[in-house]
Length: 142
Image 1 (tube, rainbow, N blue to C red):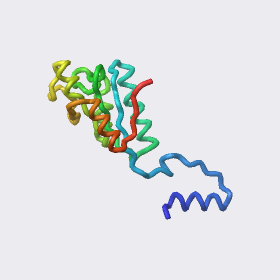
Image 2 (cartoon, rainbow, N blue to C red):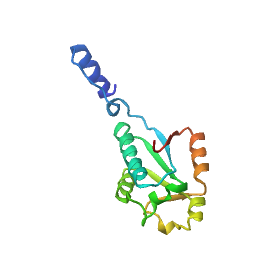
Image 3 (cartoon, one colour):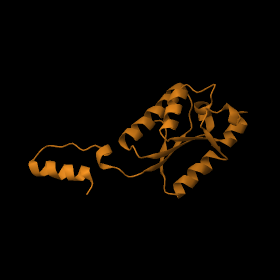
Image 4 (spheres, rainbow, N blue to C red):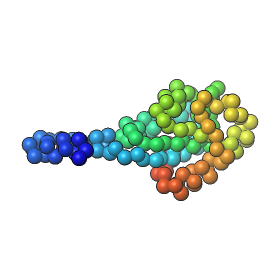
């Protein structure tokens, strides 16, 4: 039996009030595709905050962040306002991918990306494929 479940039942038998958090109970791996379409300063900060919130509640989450449209600056070395946050997320296993269609329109190259950020041919197609594989979908922002 899971030690957390054992602890819960032991506390229940003794009448000890116990608050369970998602981290204690939920040890499953959750796969999440995270769509980002906006790249203003507040949007960039919000993305990092939302990712931190997910990882705090679901530490085993497997997350892929898909950047396309006006969100491309989020993952560009020279334009990202949260490059340190992205590097931190990458070190925690979060994957960031940039849409090659968007990059082409912005005249951006793979060398312009923050180290560790990968590309996909189409951001929207990537989201479709992940959803077909059973990944949960989240649109970043408000």
